[in-house]
Image (cartoon, rainbow, N blue to C red):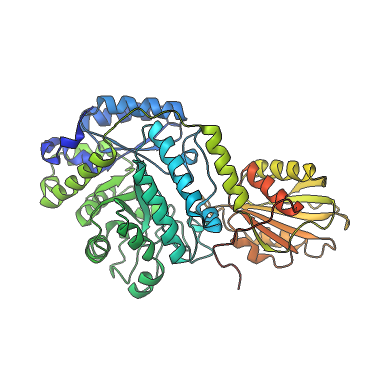
Length: 505
């Protein structure tokens, strides 16, 4: 491992090692050959670093240390940590979706989450956070951003996104804000297809770009462009990842960003299914991306392009300077990081679940008996267990617990509690309630007793069901969130959070 990167310069990089510094392949611990391939990519090519998927804390820590020890240059180890290390690495802390922080709107609580995330990352040898999401979710039916955004209010996203990025970087982890110039208005999932946003530059400057401007003003060092096309910015309809007018014209020249540009995953189908990967990599690097993330065939690309004169171009030298400057700041090793207090960190995440509960309508339970119905695509065992445990502790009897498509007999003396878990996930559209599901839930509108809706994850589907007497929204699917809902319904906890998005007409 290069022990003193503070004196390392990209000029020390040999021509044969140049191409690999522009690539960050994946390590996926669910793939048995992934670590071996990573070692080969370090030894034979000298790649820039890796994006990490799966594994547990101890395995990730062991692997990053091993790869750093055999690398000629400092390595970036990145991870999707919008919700904390536990989003990708088991044993790490998993926080609610970002909209929970929008609901609480407390900078001190957010700084604590960012500091916990940074500490757990550093313990595992990770130094590049693919977070925060700076998208302003202006489209309620957005299938992939949705509750991952802090809010639909540009000012609130600007404030909270800037706080998160600034804190991560003060804690020694490079923050990569995404998805420039904004993925919040899309109706498509860019993992599955190429979305298109029909907004003028003026409208984008009002609604989508302020969070990026705020973060750049706070010395944000890294930005991830969206696999989304913006015809008003690039009439050719090229996705931002491959667009010179967006990356050089808007991001660098107009907004004055001088840091790293790291692409989103090149395995996402918005860029095609891999048949044009070499061409897309070269286009991205040629038009303003500094590091291509998660290519499908990194070894093949580096073998095919090793002698390409493109990598000797002065523009590539500028990218290399940015890469190594960022590595000096964030990938230079340092003191041994003490083991985090994972139990205490988990309790902080649970407290965010509790504090973020938003009462949209109604209030506490009117009776002492409930029937609990779950519907939605997301897993629910933790939610339901926490909810039923919490209600039982408050002397509320859970008479029935059933799931779609069951239609049991219900008594009017028992309140009906409908639980919807819906959250964005790649390639799934899990945050969208289907027509069949809406019809099923609406069939309970004639139930004569008290009707309560609890949403876990996305709050937007609540607009589909106006007949509920009480509606409470939470922003994750944990046992703690279920217990928090029970506390609100029983009157034990008074909700002070405010829904940070507009839903319904």
